[in-house]
Length: 215
Image (cartoon, rainbow, N blue to C red):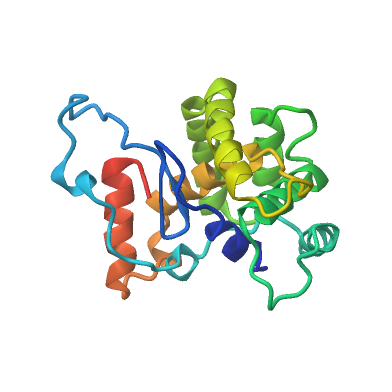
C-alpha cells in the first residue's frame, strides 16, 4: 500500500465542537435505533485511549495510484519524507488526489463519481468491492453537502487562526472529510482475513467505532 493512508490518518487536530483524537476526525456520537438522543452506551462517553494506527489493524483497499500520490506530493511540496505534513498541506494533498483520480469532477464531490472509481479500484477483490459500495452509500447518506460545508467552515476557521503565513494556501477539506468517513465505515466491517485480530487495541477501536459510529 502506498503512503497516502498514513498521511491521511494523521491529518486532523482539535477543532471546536468536533473532537479530534489519535489523528481522526471525530463527530459527536450519532443516535442509534437502540438509544435515545440522551442515552448513549457508556462506551461512547470516552474514545479508546489508544494511538494505534488503523492501517496496522486493517489492510485497507488502495484507491489511489502511486503515480498520482507522487505527483500531488510534488505539487504540494511534500516530497521530503523527513518533513511531517500538517493539516493544511495534507488536506491539499488529498484534494489533489481526488481531482486527479476523477473522484471530484465538479466543485461538489458526487456520489456516482466516487462510487465508480472506488468500485473500479476494488473490482478484483469481491469482499472489499461490496463493502466499499456500502461505505460510500453510507457516507453520502450521512453527510449532505450542507453538513460538509459546516464542518469545513469549522476547520478552515481554526486553521486560519493557526496558519503561520497568511499567504499559505488553505484547501477545501471536503475530500478529507468524505475520505475519513469512508475509511471509518470500512474499519467497522474490516474482514477477518484483513484484520489484525491478534492486536487487542485494534479490536478495542473497532468495537468503539461500531457502537458509537465514531473513531
